[in-house]
Length: 95
Image 1 (cartoon, rainbow, N blue to C red):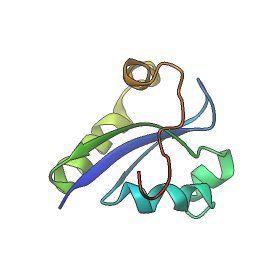
Image 2: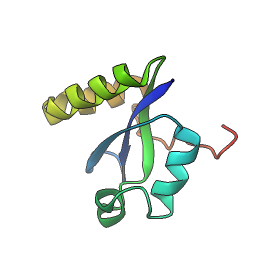
Image 3: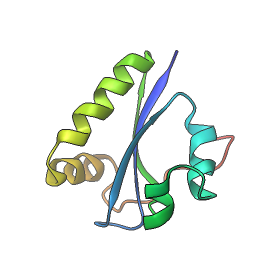
Image 4: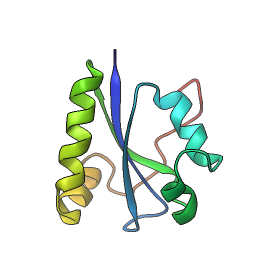
């Protein structure tokens, strides 16, 4: 089963949330509707700024755990390497 590791933020340089899912097209609308997690709902961390696809959900879960242990600066650098302006990457369920 495919898996995705992703990071969301409210704006550039702000709070970062790291999550994992098997269906990013389903998960992002949940975050945007305030149903994704208490953390993302409380802090408005709903903009998809980075994601990575894995062919095995187990690998995605391991990657998520690893990223959560990283220093914040490393996470920022990972985001900005692919998305320097922290633009919203999610364009809807058919993306």
